[in-house]
Amino acid sequence: MTQTGISETAVQQLSRAFRGELVRPGDKTYDAARAVFNGMIDRRPALIARCTGAEDVVAAVNFARENDLPAAVKGGGHSVAGYSVCEDGLMIDLSLMKAMKVDAHAQTARAEAGLTWGEFDAATQAVGLATTGGVVSSTGIAGLTLGGGIGWLAPMHGLACDNVRSYEVVTAEGRPVTASATENEDLYWGLRGGGGNFGVVTSFEYTLHPVGQLLAGMVVHPVARAKEALRFWREYNQTAPPEVSSASGIITVPDMGLVAGIVLCYPGSPDEGEAALRPIREFGPPAMDTVEPISYLALQTMLDATAQPGYRNYWKADFLEELSDEAIDVITAQAQDVPSPMTQVLLEHLVHGAVQRVGRNDTAFAQRDGKYSLGVYSVWENPAESEKNIEWTRRFYDAVRPFSAGGVYVNYLGEEGEDRVKEAYGENYRRLVDLKKKYDPTNFFRLNQNIKPTV
Image (cartoon, rainbow, N blue to C red; front, side, top):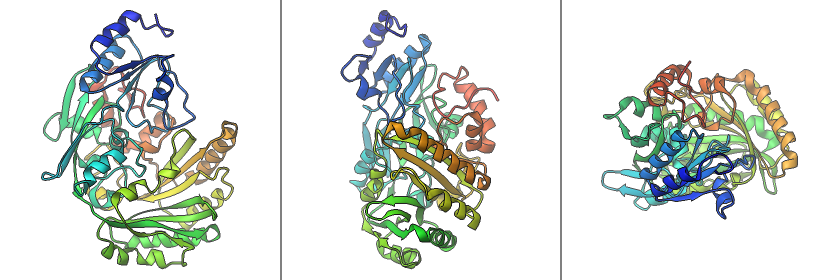
């Protein structure tokens, strides 16, 4: 028997049906394989199944179910709650599954679930195409897409999930199925925002769009002028072209300290973007302006330095009813005593334009009302500073909670309980429960932002 009670006979049976690598405690690759993005997470699975294809996923799901093991599914490993790895269970690791085929003529891509956005973007940009993806290149395509998928191209082309044509899925029964607009349509609806609740998605077929050089970068204002900068940004968003993407916040910049930063992206020609972004670039004027014509690949790596793996992360997020003067006052005041220079307080204005042209009930992702997403992303390195950083984050969140619109982007949730998951899905939650009853009635896939098969 292994230390967690899995019989050696069962493991040997799995190995005969498994083409990938089975990693156990004590193996040289074990610690690297179980590591995830958030350094606060230190869980030790009984077995790690490093899959090489859908057949391996089927074998792994069947093994976990037959041996009554909790199963975690890892794509890019960016779940801040650490759901990609489990304690004393089976970790189904998809990170070796990186096959990808781009059809430039049809403007589609079929991509396996182990790819990161950096890998995906490199392949599609080789032929001048892209789809909405995450804003940090090491993020996995699977987790981000299954949670909805907000990114710089969203106002022009919709969420990542809005661009998925079909999914290949392994269900809790170990059965491979396809979900699309013409096949298992109910599952297709639920996978567009419903997370990993209904199965292991092994590959995605995306719609791609022509994306060339664009205009993007950041303008920076001294923190003493943060209120004025955020208020002007709010007003600018009311009249800016709908395809403009932007985010603002209070961050720490080397050699400048705490500042108010506004990240801008015009995902069309740089010449058109000059006029579209001019008002926000001229206000102040800013202390620094890095906006320039860049490639989409450069844009997608612009924030990578803020999200290094292994650091400790604790996040709180909400959608705001409106970005009122009072809300801005509270946000800027609370940010003044941030304990870590790696922490970011961000306001995102990405849920508009094409995102809003999809109905709230047309996909599982329901947060399409154009509100601002506020995220408090605390990041630090020293474990001894955990209590201080977590306490500051909770205090910040409590202070801004009165301005909440009552919803949250599910990909920003930590381990916050069933009520917060319900907030993320709003009026779509009951339909998701019915879908869970159909595809996973025993809640086999429960290590996620869980939708239970009962109300």
